[in-house]
Image 1 (cartoon, rainbow, N blue to C red):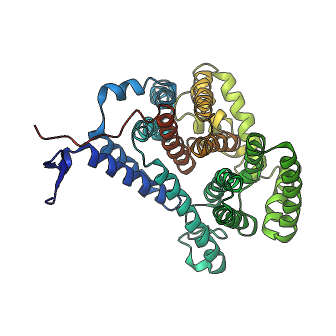
Image 2 (image 1 turned 90 degrees about the horizontal axis):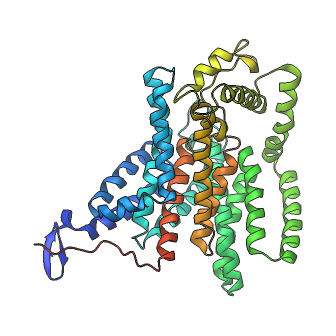
Image 3 (image 1 turned 45 degrees about the vertical axis):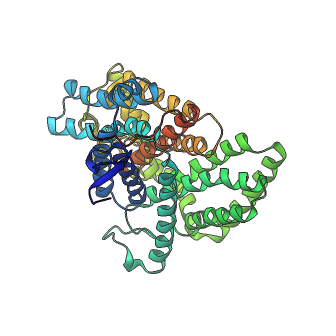
Length: 429
């Protein structure tokens, strides 16, 4: 076969006209996107666009448009559309309004991922690529802890962080740990002890990094919740009691052995005390301020909100002191996904947001590894969004889009008995 052509039913056609070749290219781009997610922001944005471009030649437009009517696809589109339409009633400058649309725009890639991986048999490659990339990041984190000069961050370098920040890294590692719990149990039940032990080593390595290097408080809150969901769904009562006791023992040992973990947990009470007694802008104190003010903003425009990009202007108008005090802080993000949406788009936006989470949860209510991974992606995003706007944050938002898009397409493919097939090579006319 000569360069630049593909064989189809005994004939040669240009690769650029072959849907099967484009489909494989899309799989490869999705794998690259998963590999780059823990490491790069700009590369993820570029690969997201490239993925959409490579999928376009494989699209069968009538089935594709029909697929967009399904709630799992329609609700992400509705959320993005509301952010765009919300620019019409905002008082912010137009540049600020359109900048506020950007965080929701990544949700438009989710229906395309679902459509593609409903037809591709290589979705597991993407999920494995993300795990491999996180394991490599974990190894790099240990190196950076030992040799801080290796970090690419300057000025605000954090312990054990090579790129990005400790919140992103903790979200990645926590998701991988809980996702690995399912195959570990399945391997043990089927007698595949060697495979189970390998995954146990990976999971414990990730946990050790969060224990002894650095971990976010959000991960400390959400990981036990996700473990509880796993125990309730997949373990017997006796096993749950033993596991619960073991987790308590391991938790106490880890806390006693890790000064870093002690410092992280101690900051909960210390920050709250400093905020209440001295009115200083600690992390917890600021969040309480953001949430209190955001609820007032929501009450002022409860139906459709103040419009896209309005949040910062509202906080500026509500500031009651210098920025060194908690009441004087101005921010464009209240660090809560529900309030982030409610302030800008009111009850209408909140209804779409919760419908989106619910529909995606129900998508993964079945059995199997892929359904488990998808379920954990949604649950992690929901619970961590109590303390951040993680659906719209760049890194965590892309974790959601990629995880739900790939796993969702794979689950829908399995539910249809793989009747939806990959694009086939076409013969020349």
